[in-house]
Amino acid sequence: MVKEGLMKKLLVLSLLFTCMTGNAQVSADSVVMTVAGKQIPLDEFIFIAQKNSEVNLSDRKSVNAYVELFKNFKLKVAEAEDLGLDKTKAFKDELDSYRAQLTSSYLSDKDGEEAAVRAVYDRYGEVLELSHILFRLPQHTLSGDTVLVYQKAIEVYDRIQAGEDFATVGKELKEADKENVGYEYVHCLLPMQTVKAFENVAYSMPVGSVSQPVRTTMGFHIIKIHSRKPNPGLVRVAHILIPFEKDSLKFGEAETLARAEEVYREARNGADFAGLAKEYSSDTGSAKRGGELPAFGVGEMVEPFEEAAFALNTPGELSRPVKTRFGYHIIKLIEKKGLPSFEDKKKSWSRQMAQGERNFEYYGAFDERMKKEYGYRFYPEAYAELQALCNEYFPSDPAFYEKAKEMDKTLFHLNDTDFSQSEFAYYIQRCPFSTKSYAGDFMQEVYDLFIRDIVTTAERKNLTVKHPEFDLLMKEYRDGILLFDISNKEVWNKPMDQQAKAEAEWIEQLNRKYPVTINWKLVKKVSKMTKK
Image 1: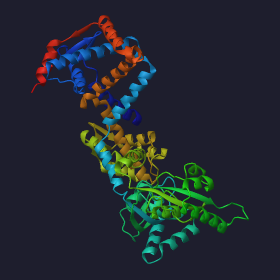
Image 2 (image 1 turned 60 degrees about the vertical axis):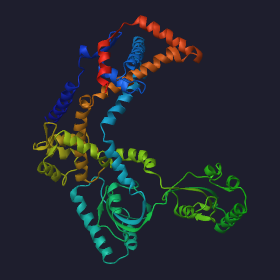
Image 3 (image 1 turned 180 degrees about the vertical axis):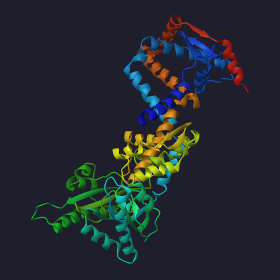
Image 4 (image 1 turned 90 degrees about the vertical axis):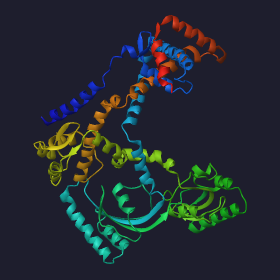
């Protein structure tokens, strides 16, 4: 019964907006032209004209010239349709792809999305150095599961606050219980490199401070901030790697260093660095390019290499041999590129935020606007009853649904429809998609997705009511594909010096083949209406 009730409500929403957006008959007094039996409405005629910078709708002569161009355009489309070019799989796939892209552009809040990415970028100018102790939680965590783990974390927090050394305590706990406790020193943390909850807390902390336990999908973390430094941006270098020889009696570390010092002296004395890299470097990938590496930022290379690279200041400057676990490196600075701009990071971060746990930040502005437009009303008492079930059952567990399916209080009101607790519980079973491992957080994410699912369905069906230009854009793109395909077939595949003649003969043939009626009375009104 619950399933049928929810499906019926969602179907009614879809049908309601389908009815609102169904194809309407074109009024006879708004038909500007009929080509090959197809009526062309005035709004399409004007829409295309306004996108052509050479058309002046307030000038009679310009309008008349545009009528001829528009008529020829429609004749070509009619010919493409007559040849069945609109029935091919390639045509349908391209049109479907465009519809999906266009629809997506309306089901978003671009300003809100940019603001969400900007908020992350605002942190990008600062690099955090930190340590953290992790108290792990099970993969699917109920409220009761967190109590003992949290208490243990608090006890450790109190020890540190009482004066015990953070690193000593962390290493001691990890050594004693590696399965349940972790300790990590992070010399460089930047935005988008860890889970959102951890990043949010870490970037809010002053240097030297220790956080109370912070819950993430991994467990409870205690964080200590060692430093906050300006982000130096990107650096581009070339290097020569003299490797440690494995299983070698002849070449130990001292011999490897001596060999690196010799190559370094050659480079200092003017030998071609690229040639030395090709001859001596064991990093074959970069050696082929004269030792050059792609630009990189802090935290992307092993620490000693990174420190030496960023310590160089003048293009062409060389480092003395730098030891890493791979061997000794001689590094040459090519350029310091500074901090990537917001536009440089925007595309990749937008894609990353849209797909992961940060999608609620990324789409937050759209979600809130839709809730307001569709009259969202929330009933917290009903939600609290479902949340109480999370103490005993994980929301995606069938046992959770068995308890919740009899709960019929209104959970929220949206788009003139009440949705009950049991309907939401059924949705959890049907769409158990969440990045969270803690039961309460899991349910909250699925709830937010349920709301988004409903408003997005309604908005899709309501697109042409709220955005009349949607159908015009689809029509323009559809006809544009056909125009390209038929023109390529009839004209553009011919030599350049023959195309003008072929075009004129083709237009003449189309005018004989397809009937055309032009509503000149309506055309004259267009120029009168648009005159100042």
